[in-house]
Length: 106
Image (tube, rainbow, N blue to C red; front, side):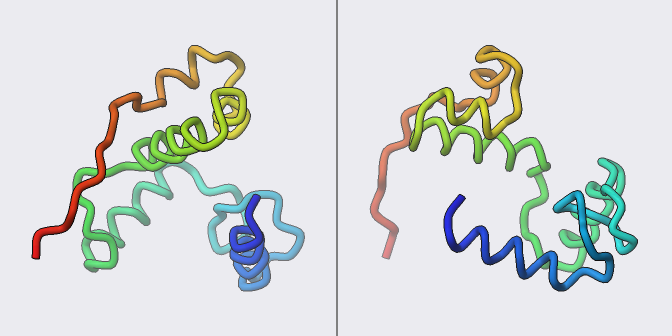
């Protein structure tokens, strides 16, 4: 975990009403958020214009994080990050497409 991420998580925990949180993503009562609750919050953020991603869901974000972990630190690390029991599960998330850098249009 990076120092920055550790700071963000600690700040998020301090900002919650509930103390001794078990879950990072919770409702206002400190209870684990359900997939329905997460999807509702995501939809509301898109409708308010806070998130301008209409065709992205949580699993896309998860796949991106696992893919980045694989590229940066290898399959074992990505598997641990994803909490997968075997490598096959992790490899399904990994996007092995080669991405080439491009210059922005000016």
